[in-house]
Length: 328
Image 1 (cartoon, rainbow, N blue to C red):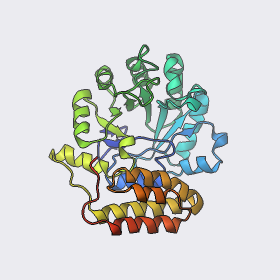
Image 2: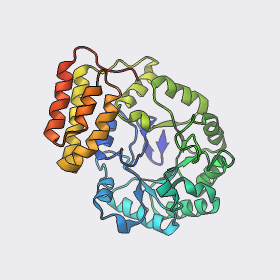
Image 3: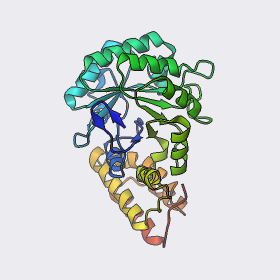
Image 4: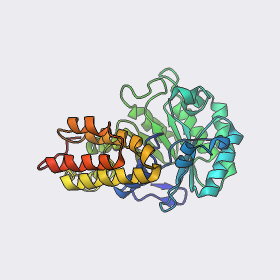
């Protein structure tokens, strides 16, 4: 799959997720073959970029082309200014979020709330595309609600505005994350435009990825919740696509080294205090894919020491014999 001048090594890309896809997690997913990773969604109001949270979200992966940054907002000029500022910092792709269903985002008429205003969508996309010399991509949903599925119309506006790739979460804003992804809608959008289409939603297994490719004819797949606690999912997906075979579970010590390495990276990136708190949610996700991990999870999310998080993780793996991976 190609986005502007960038040929992605894999069609499986990591979905930008606020509070999840920070720099340590992006590094880990790229290690396992993610074709592209994108920064966490960042406000287009550059006056707010001096907060610790925004500074961390704008910690770009300068060693991993293409460097992609996602911005959100509803004011075309503000988004254009933010896009230029991101490019000055090293961004090689600007992604615009029109898919986030969160109330606090939609209340500001940003994220998926923009799908209700096609004229504003066109103005935003045209303004941002004209403001930068790098590819601009777009993330959307299939519409605002089931009665207003205007994904095809939005997609055509995007293509005409110069957007170079479109990611589609196969649900409406009203659906949030409930129900099943609408792959047939994504297929209809793919048929209506010529730019690359990336399908998103409910892609959690290798078998499901092949099914989604078949149902949507998409150029790539965007993995979100399926990567939480399983950053190696990208390696599984590539193996399945290339060899049509099941990926062998990672060994106990491989899993141990992945998790402990991730913990250490989070502690370095955030500092011990914040790093411990951020690590708790990732540890909870890891535990969903480990056998007999209930007691370990109960302990690990309550400690307030970076060294203790690592020690308890080491002890969990030392106590268990054989394969401890839980089936995905």
